[in-house]
Amino acid sequence: MVTQRLKITQAACEKTPPNSKPWDTEIKGFGLFTGKSTKTFYYQREVRGKTVRIKLGNFPQVSAGIARGDVLQLAADHASGLSAKCLNASKIPTPAQALETYIMRPKLRSERNKRQIHNQMHRHLKNCRAAFMRADVQRPRMDRWLFA
Image (cartoon, rainbow, N blue to C red):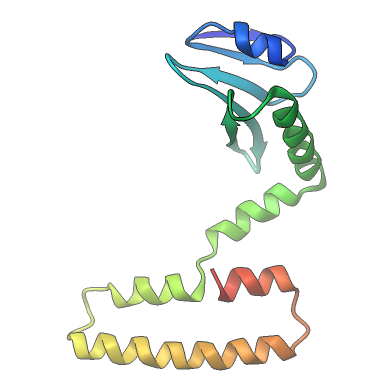
């Protein structure tokens, strides 16, 4: 695969050969990966020591100008530290995910026991949801925690 540096524009995207990875000269981490039949825009950065690659869309459906605008917004989020916070938040399971993981454990003896635990937790989560609505909790955190 050929790696090169050029300004990613509409004309450059149309002329890019298959199986190449041109990176933008102006915006660090903005690239166009081409395969045999598709051309895809990506934004790639290091977040807490890990490479994070975000797909922005395929070339004919997403123009180079729109992808460039999206990359500038992502770069601003990265500079402010928002991307690191989102990466950490994505690792925390929601209560519903934690419940499903717990129920799938082989140590639970019977289907009746699994149903009882499931019903009890749903009753408790409904009560917690009402308490969170009254408390002073940041809305995005509450949505991530309860409604995902």
